[in-house]
Length: 227
Image (cartoon, rainbow, N blue to C red):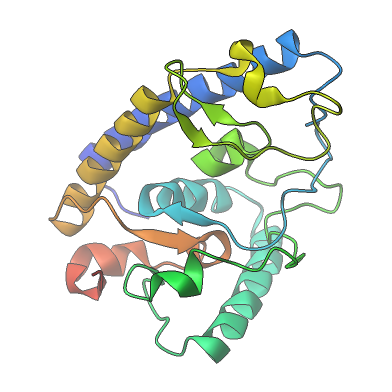
């Protein structure tokens, strides 16, 4: 990985922000006991492709590289297989595997029937890099409604809230506008340190995040091809 104190400091701040997201989720579970069924081993949402930021990708790789070497190889084979499948349709998809230079309709509307497991999903249904998982994985399953009532996402897991409309539950609301603003600010700082440009749009898919050559990207920022 990259031995850059500024980048490591940004990542630490981001992890603190992610911890606050986890705390929100835990409070929701406590206040809606019996209605939220997100537990260790449930992997219903760990399927298909999800786009994450370059900062999330860096954090994900940090956790990935802490896995035992044999397990890393197993995961890498799965990620490379997924890459080959994507390149069959998108031959222009190459290092550093960012999506922003592709037409939006190719990657922002992924098929809902894609049940391919995340390569970081363990055999027991748990996440192999749980402490380093992306923001999206931490907010998934519950609606993301700001304290003001603004909706950042009205989606929620169909296993949760049987017979209840969670969008009407004020106790699920949180300061999402502030949190997402901080996330984008940290992403801009991270990209400025890594690429020399404060990009706020630099996205990839979770399997591809494991294959990004960050040292090469830091050496040659022109590898980033964004609109």
